[in-house]
Image (cartoon, rainbow, N blue to C red; front, side, top):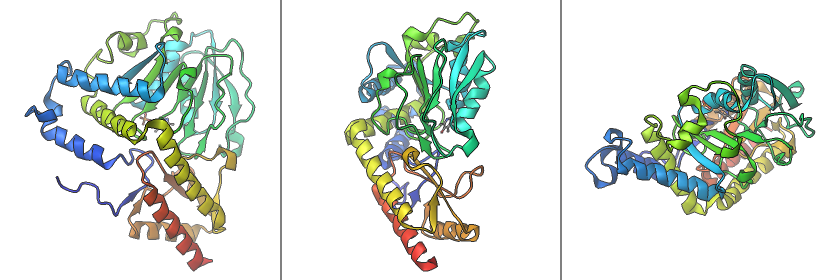
Amino acid sequence: MIEILKSSIHNFNAGPSILPKEVFEEASRAVIDFNNTGLSILEIGHRTSLFQSVMDEACSLVKELMHLDNDHDVLFMHGGASTQFMQVPMNLLNENELASYTDTGAWAAKAIREAKLFGHVEIAGSTKETNYTSIPKELSISPTAAYLHITTNETIHGTQWNNIPYDCGVPLVADMSSDILSRVVDFNKFDLIYAGAQKNMGAAGVNLVVVNKNILGKVNRIIPTILDYRNHIKEGSMLNTPPVFAVYVAMLTLRWLNKQGGVTAIEKVNNEKADLFYNTLDSLPIFKGIVAKEDRSKMNAVFIMDNVALEKEFLDVCKQEKMIGVKGHRSVGGFRVSMYNALPLESVKALTELMKIFAKKKG
Ligand SMILES: *Cc1c(COP(=O)(O)O)cnc(C)c1O
């Protein structure tokens, strides 16, 4: 097997992003010869028992890792998380009803825009006025709202919900694209969870959707067949051809996570990485965190320098040291360091050492 991931590269990309090396190796083997069948995973039918066992394992791993009860169904769907922005209100919100949304960043704002196409939207809490540098502490939710929507981790702005509003009094819906399976949360308390796979659990091209079946079937609009969650539940995510390879890569990533000890174990590592990173950040005055400390994301750390010329210099140094993906999102500027499940602690150690050396030189 060729070395596909040079260990000297540290990948802090925000998404698509780093996956476990063994997933890349096994996925590449399956492209040539899937499970010693002499066939590529790319050329087998999705209705073969070969692929059915991949789908079954992926679903049961999600159930196991999330400790899901029997009301919650696991779906793998096309379209990226952005499709869920419209599919959620299409399935859950009547035209004359109200859905409650929290406006916490670029992704939440996109979800809100789509929901308005299907019904009324109230903003339960917003931090837009302060450039999305924190998470709202007080929410105002109409008791008649069809659901409350939150974005558990804002990938671009670097905030994360630490106190999830489980007891909001209405069904809870979450976009977990960038922190899915990174920390222990009570997944059963959510009525619908969606996540594009390409940040924390696989390759681009597939979404994980976890839905409590009891909230479905309550809207009176006509839902196109392919967009109705109930049809996907009925057909076991095989209503049409699923993104076979992306589901396979997700299954391998879930298997890897399970082998690490599951969500509890990975959360420990993620905490260690985030602590190391933020402690270093706070100890070096040359760098500046811009997110309220209690709302800092453990997945995406966003920070800046007061001296913009130095920012460019630091990015050059990162590049020299083969640290990629450190540049901030174009809408925020500065830096963004993504520390997803598959990013080794060693990468954070290497980056924080580099930050210290740079600060010393410039300070
Ligand atoms: C990346 C991301 C999305 C968009 O995902 P696509 O798969 O590109 O549609 C949505 N929400 C969050 C929180 C994200 O990080």
